[in-house]
Length: 202
Image 1 (tube, helix red, strand yellow):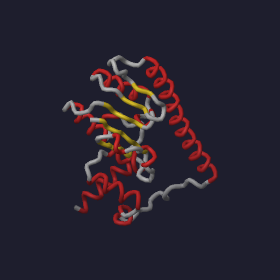
Image 2: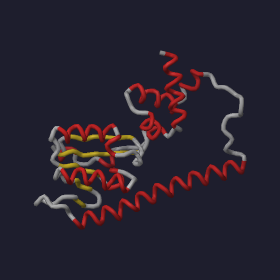
Image 3: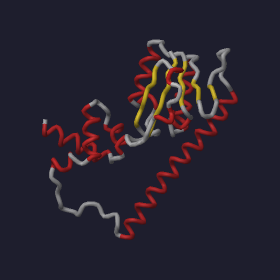
Image 4: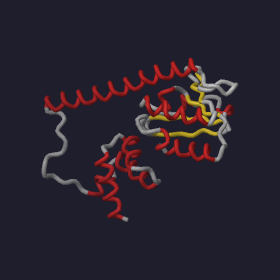
């Protein structure tokens, strides 16, 4: 079975640019989560692991390397797992494959994947640094204030906020707290609060 794996970091992002020639694949598996989440901890990753355990996958196809992950170690661990099973991973945009037709590991691809994976990891760290710098600057200007200390928010109003409502729906579907936080862009503490408040309503 030829599987196409696609991933975006948030609900708002479009998956379509990663999906072309759908007829070339037997199955398309989607994930909406941060690339920092280990591959087999994702909803889609767990589905792929299940198919691997059943010996149903003959090849995995990914639009580009950073869709597999943003953490170099996890990318290499995932590739190693597939290599042990002699199942090639094809990175469409870069034109790379992990295993040749003769079943041997492609050494040139291994080198390129390591380099590109490192670049992807650096980009993620730079984005995070810029976000933290932006928050610090906003605090200094008095823009980033948050809610005033001692104030409380109506429970239903809190749960009906667009992002919070979407997070609640994802929790109801069985997503883990960490997955919901990555998809929604909310802080893990907020997800815990949503889960706690929603249980009080049920």
